[in-house]
Image (cartoon, rainbow, N blue to C red; front, side, top):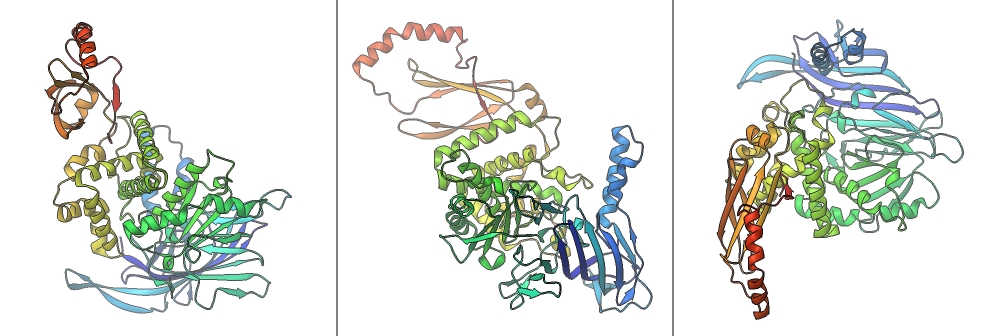
Length: 600
């Protein structure tokens, strides 16, 4: 497979909201090996009208292997998986294949070094593609209608992991970043908000047909950075705009016009300024967008929130007023999780190098969102949320499911980003914090932000998961990878029923627990650390887990201080206590024990 890299790309689109049609042109500066005579790009559901390479008209072959899987009469799962993996491999390299015509102008040539020596030569070409997109099935969503009482016509990108190729030709890969310029032409009265800063002095241009062209680029006064194609997103519509009262120069919120829209928008986003301040104290300044952030509320997105650099697209159903009590916490949590993804996420500063790293990105983002919610709502709400997440993961994570960190190369990216895996990943990251400590976890996050993946061969050689555990050994001096392997490579959560009993007569604590039998067969033998809180001291004790039942007892450290009447009452009830202990076979394990899960 020939090496290729996009240096820069310009995307110019004209949107017809009534017909749901997009007419676009893209200019790509691509560099690849001089021996390769084909240029391969990702482009699905697009109708290509014309292609030029280096100023020469070129032919093209446009095939979408993923759309032809169901055409074969395959009835068994094994052959379907084989055809599915083969189609995924072909589409990953490119659906649009362009042979380089004779006489195509080469922009520049440069040597390709391997082990410090020039092994081959690369050539750069400028590729221009004209295309149209009619009633897209994904990538770009048209919502609303012109009917009275309905939301006005608007459109937005849907934030899919492979959604960029669905609305413009590109090199849709995690490991490829480039400079982008986006130009969107919309009717007058429409507002365009994008995941890139506005071009200095060229924000708006009036077209001959009366439309306005909005221009955004990654090379501006607010910053100079490269992003992958999946980080390019925008929303266009007749939005209302307000500035956040907490941070008016940095936070801007948009929503569609409806009765009391501004009041609902102000109330629903009232906690975002405080959340942004808390995240910047933990992770540093906002990485993209020149320190500014925009929230746009649209109709019927595939998820509650879609994150892009400096931009969050949220569902309009999250908006509410003070009279709706049950909606407050879900709205705040969804917006906080999207805000965390500005630092750590698919479109954040720390991105996965490969799709198997999605568990770490989702886990870190989910855990940081929980910490912010603990600051905003208090410890009780945080503890209840953890308990509910642990119960849900233990019930849904079955032994027959897929592991958290799957190394299946040709698995679809969606398979790495399920809701269950995101919930479990946040609990696993909490386990890592328990082992290394909160201060060391902050050091790890700072090191990850310093060594954010870049578009070079060395960065792609090391996965984000391996980098995280290597930094844990280097910065924290602790080996946590071996202890996390059962949670990353295995499936299912062991269920533990446990209880304790304070034996007043012997002045000791009796503890017993029962581990699910199949969990012992799947997981290696290990020890479980429990923390004991007494009135005068708090300490930890290790319980060896090598059989289904585990029983332990130890002396109580604190002295028992009771009144005379209470001691007499204990003596009168001593016979009853002894009888109950004999019925339990001298063990504190009761019939209805509590269930423990990976975060407890």
